[in-house]
Image (tube, rainbow, N blue to C red; front, side, top):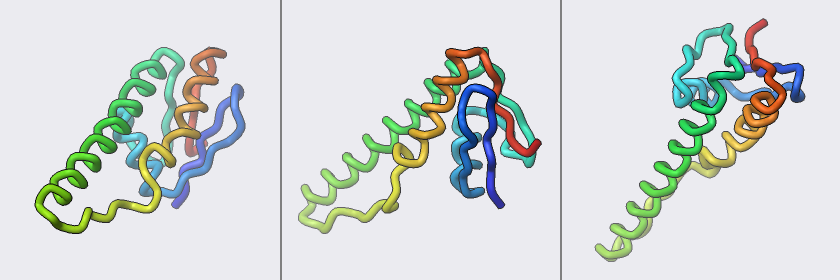
Length: 107
C-alpha cells in the first residue's frame, strides 16, 4: 500500500505504507486509509517530527559511542534514516502551513 499526500499548496507526496504510517503516528494522526491534517495542526506536527528525528539521531549516536567504548563494532542502522524519509513531508507541512491549506490522503 502507498500513502499519497495531497494539497493545493504543494505537489503530491507518495510514501510506502510503513514509512507513511510511521510519520503519521509520530504526528499523532490515525494512519488509516483516509485522513486530513489541518493548517492549525501543522506547527505541532512539524515540532513532533523534528523531535523524533533529533531523538533517533541522538539514540544512534549514543549506541555507537557505547559500542566504541566497549571495543565493539558499532551497530548498523537503517540505510535510510527518519530524517531522509521525513524531510519531504516536513517541507510539505511548512509550505501548506504558510499558505493555510490542508493535507489529505486517501481521497
